[in-house]
Image (cartoon, rainbow, N blue to C red):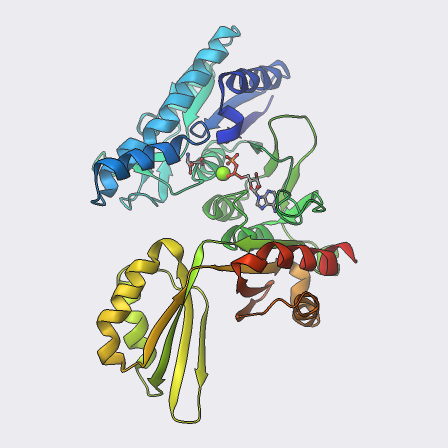
Length: 404
Ligand code: ADP
Ligand code: ASP
Ligand code: MG
């Protein structure tokens, strides 16, 4: 008999019939003799609906109250699932984050799990109950409710798996695995049987929202076996695995697209020491994460600095730079929110020098202009106009994945 953790995402619990479907899947796992801990997300659309309500009553950002509000989404779905399980005759018990005690830091809206006290969960399992835990939420030292950032129920599930030493963490969603590209963007995308933790980490940080990045970090750190699969069928999904020797023979594992960044260019700033610190210091102080940075020197001793920030932080970043403009002595600041970052990811990028060149060739053939480029050990990213992003994903998939 094994202990398994199953996580069901928003679409999988988005309607009453789907909650019943989840209950029968849990019943089937129990019938095999396994103990089951279920982690649920809010019903699909609910977190956005709650955020929208908050925006209507207040223009003030109050992270603590927003977390109290957002955590209610998962409270509803975990209670409904526990009811549906009992309706099938299965003993079940729901737990909110603070009842398990999922202890986090106090960074509202993006809290990190510090520890999980599994005592109550284990007692419940001993009583033969199915444990249903509200995902996405925790509690800080001062007993304030916190949330883990969008998509955070994945992290709740992986962290629960690590705390309980579960034999597997099954993440159920609306696709039946991790694909070589978002199957809704690139219909020819193929399902991967397995993917390394490192590749999935890159993919998650580059816009593939199929798993929250922190869930992958946690899985890698604690060696949690993660199996991502569909709640609508029984197909084998995708396993997260450690890298092995055969893997770098595969050039590229996946193409991703991130539409959530904006580009800012500061024109003709004097090319002198300390400049980058002057530009990026205040931005970092405001907790804005800068992603790509390019600096071009020109003949007249000035330079253009271009960088990207999350779209949601774009207004704040512009405000800070404009405030700072006199000090920086720039000749102008421009920005563009209609961009996309398209990336190719794979452990093969490390050993195959030709990946970037092949990528640029494929985009050139489509007459897609590359605005920025960045590389790391296992990925190459380019910034293109948002209107070109689907075509870019498609052509990169065709030239780097389908052609092999
Ligand atoms: P859930 O609500 O179950 O957590 P999400 O919407 O967060 O589901 O994540 C699943 C979605 O991730 C899919 O519907 C798909 O559009 C998207 N996605 C992006 N990239 C990929 C990929 N490479 N493979 C599979 N799904 C992907
Ligand atoms: N309900 C939260 C969200 O929509 C958490 C999750 O679904 O994982 O982001
Ligand atoms: Mg998700």
